[in-house]
Length: 122
View 1 (cartoon, rainbow, N blue to C red):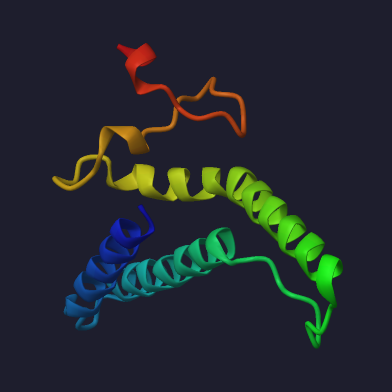
View 2 (view 1 turned 180 degrees about the horizontal axis):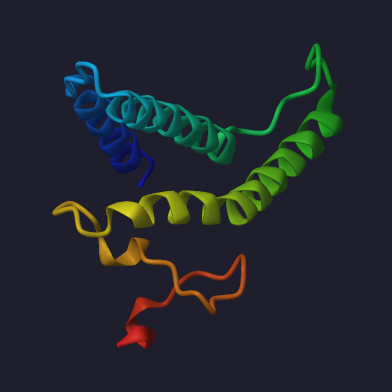
């Protein structure tokens, strides 16, 4: 899904840069707004998919290192559950694209953190 979104953002950026604005200030502002929107969406996608940070100097011994690895895994899962809605919302703008998948549709009444069951939607 992230790869799909990055591809669409690249397409949007390319198209915006192709706009010939001439002396049309409204078109200049629109092009600049699209480019700023693409950058903002890229930052949101990066934020939503970034892994949890490891502690400085990661020289933890034995069981502490193992415990830390477990905690990082839980933190990563929590971040993905909490942040994945951001990705789903960003991707939803491209629902009409040929490569868009039905499983990327977010169900509005779906409780946060629960998997989306698209079979129930039908």
